[in-house]
Image 1 (tube, rainbow, N blue to C red):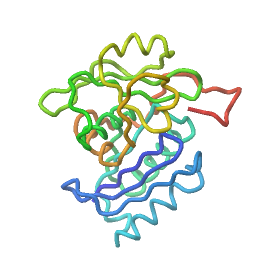
Image 2 (spheres, rainbow, N blue to C red):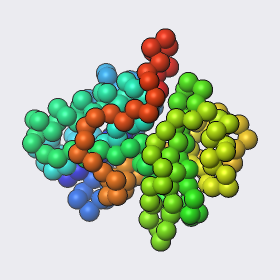
Image 3 (cartoon, rainbow, N blue to C red):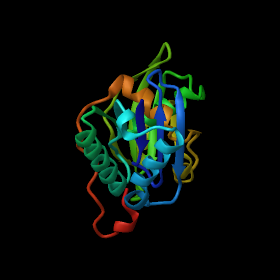
Length: 214
C-alpha cells in the first residue's frame, strides 16, 4: 500500500493507493495553511477509512516544492518521520511535474510543448517546461521563478497548465486549468522521483510577509 500526499500548495491532499496505483481512499483539505495542524491527523483518518494501519504502508510518495514554504517543510518533515518510524522508502517529486502529470492523467493536454505554471504569491510564477511524446512527459527545463513578462516570452506557443488558484493571475494567457491530483503525484514518481528529502526552493522565503509564503 502506498501513501501519497501533496502539501506544497495552500491546501493539501492525502490518499492511499494499491501497489497497482489504483486509489483506495483520499481526502482533500482546502483550508489555506492548515498543514501543521491537520496533515498528520488527516493521514491517520485516510488510513482508518481504508481499513489500514501505518504498518500496512510499503512506500510514501510526496511533493517537495516549489510551492508554499510552510507546506513543503511540514510535508517533508512528516514524510521523514514516517520513513524513520516505519522503515519504508520515501520518494519525492517536484510540484510542477506533478501538476503536468495531473493534466496528462485527465487527458486534457495532448500537445508536445507543455509549461507547468504556479503563482508564487509574490509577483512571479514558478515555471517548468516539458515535452510530450507518445503519452510520456520529458523534462526540458528545471523549475524556476519568472516575472510575468519573461514567462510570456518563454511560453511562446506552448500549452500552459496551471491550477485554479493561479489562473486569475495569468491575465490573458490561455491556460489549461487542472487540480494537482494525487494520481498526478504518483504518476510523476514513475518518471522523476528522488529519495532526496530536501525541499525544492527556487526563490527565497518572503520574510517580510510570512502569511503569504509561497
